[in-house]
Amino acid sequence: MGMLAQRYKDGVGVVQSDERTIEWYRMAAKGGHIVSQFNLAIYHRGGKCGLEKNHRRAFELFQICADAGMKEAACKVGSMYYNGQGVDAASDIKARLWWTQAAAQGHALAIQKLKILDKKESIAQFYRGVNYEKDEADDNVHSFFKARECYLISAKFGNAEYVKS
Image (cartoon, rainbow, N blue to C red; front, side, top):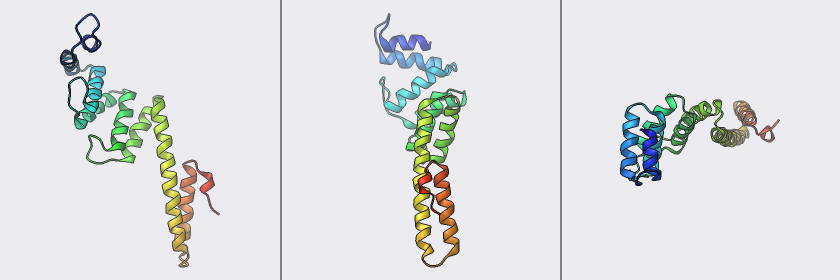
């Protein structure tokens, strides 16, 4: 059924029809066809093939596919968490979990997104350290150690230049 849906989408051997494309993808998805569920999620997310944008439904379908082990879907779930689409709130933590799952399966884009998150976290830790260092002017020993801890975390995420002695 999924292959027939693709034929209707592309107009190969049949007259191109968005309506029939969705109809066949839905039938295949109900039967548990993961690729059809993924394609429906793409169409819901982008408002394509006659479907209105529905990030919540797209997220649900991507989640089903990701839970079934589809690395592309795991990456999409991570992106939706990161962007706050189809979920109650954006979450770098949940995005990192899903991107890590996709990266473990060799998904190149997920690996890139994890590097971006690492850089973002590194910079955030560095500036937390700077703020603690400002508190150090009040002779607060605790602030010195908290600043150093933040700099070390920043370095752990790949920014050794942020380590201060």
